[in-house]
Image 1: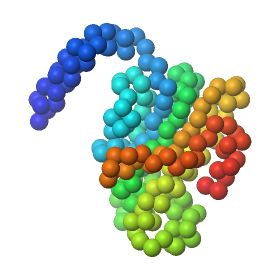
Image 2: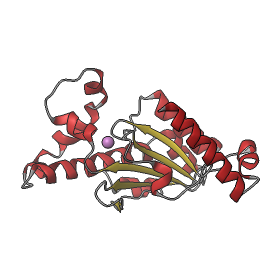
Image 3: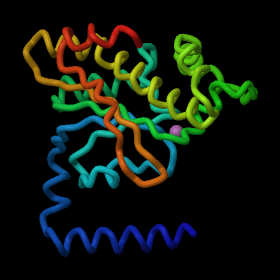
Image 4: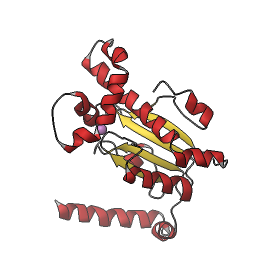
Length: 206
Ligand code: CO
């Protein structure tokens, strides 16, 4: 199997060079992506492919259930670099319907460390329990919890000091909340985009 991957890699490299002989030498010297993607680690949600972007165009951070926890050094390091050094214009928090991480947060099964990682989703679940209970199927509740989790993470990103300080300096950044559908490959924009502290204040419900 690994030899297949190495063959694929050589073919990919050759194809890229054939189409654009300077492709790799250009990227070697600089990356200047306009977008930061914060998405789920799920293998069915390939960031660049979904939005048709080449290497060098999308800065990517992925973890289980696309969380942006304000105490996570990994996520914070990515966020700081994206905002302060690369000066990305857009931060996309992208969840996906059918997320196993979101389901695992609330199904009561104990799995170990990941139960702690998923704790913020249980908080979102509790906070919105009335809305979720009113839905008529487990599938509808799961889909909605995926959306609510994305909105909560948008709020985390938009209230982070790296982002708030960038806004104070006049640097344009918009934080978006999207949910990708495994069913048809389409992205659903939740329309919770935040471009300023004023926008953020409208999201207080999450
Ligand atoms: Co997932």
